[in-house]
Image (cartoon, rainbow, N blue to C red; front, side, top):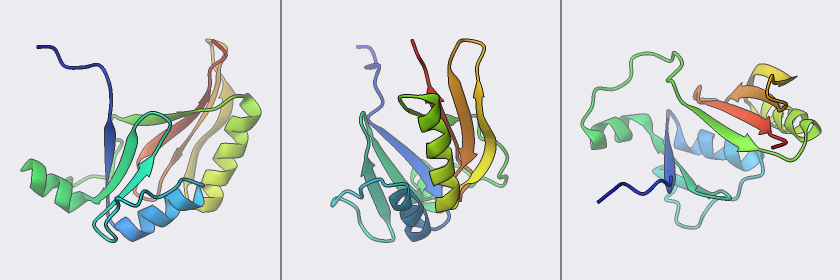
Length: 132
């Protein structure tokens, strides 16, 4: 058997589920009724589900040591949009919601346009326009 090439759920460990939920709702994302207040929040995306769970609960469930650093985790989540202007607008919306702007939108060598922000828990997101 092989492992299917799909991501069904991305879980972000957060320090405060309610605060993180409010951030994503402020982005305009719709909270799923399957969410359990203060425990887990689910958001439907156009391809998979995003969940927010307290970091300590994730590490306990996986039986791994808690993170001791807020350095870059080696993971970036990307939101694809339809134009360079939409990249800039999405970045502005994220910052108004409480994100930290990491890099303003710029043209890429491959013909795209992208920028970066971190959510209130330091998760790195890119907003990307890819013309191909």
